[in-house]
Image (cartoon, rainbow, N blue to C red; front, side, top):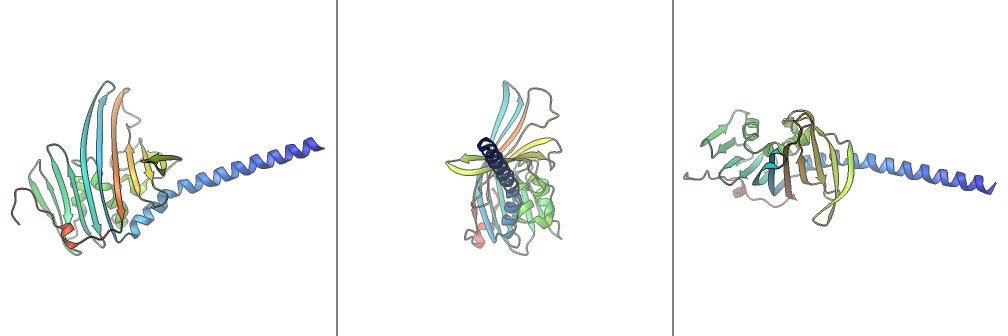
Length: 241
């Protein structure tokens, strides 16, 4: 009799632990939805960060490093600048009802995207910024419905991880956005602030054996920082204003 009771208690305890673990995992997988909602509700946002691009084959991998900064003030003031060793890309909108601008050092082209074509500033800068220009606009301004990885990412896995000694949730899955299908992606979210700390887009599943095609983006983000109008004024290098 005693053995049966102990067996039943042990079985019940295991069932409870499994149920709690399943519930916890389900809640973790919903963090991306909560993060998207948090970004969409921000009045202002600012960050700085780094991008590391690794490409090639095992043993002969080219590593490129870039930096970027972002500033945003609702409804549409925006500044994004992406800087590499020999290149620079920027897109910006100085006023709440102004036009979006884009500029790429390599081509020297400065475009003004008027008549409700501001979204083109992000699309035309996606390639030279390694896709980074599309990341945050897709969740800061979800009405754009840009098919970027953060907008439509549905995680299938979640584990606890730390970055800089701070607890984060690492969400994993497959990315269906601007790089095509079959690309593994991992996104680290701070569960306390719901801000994104890191994104890794890894080598596509269909790549040849030994190939490396990885983009790692790290963010140092601030939610609702005080931003002045001058934050969104961008001077194209070599021009007068």
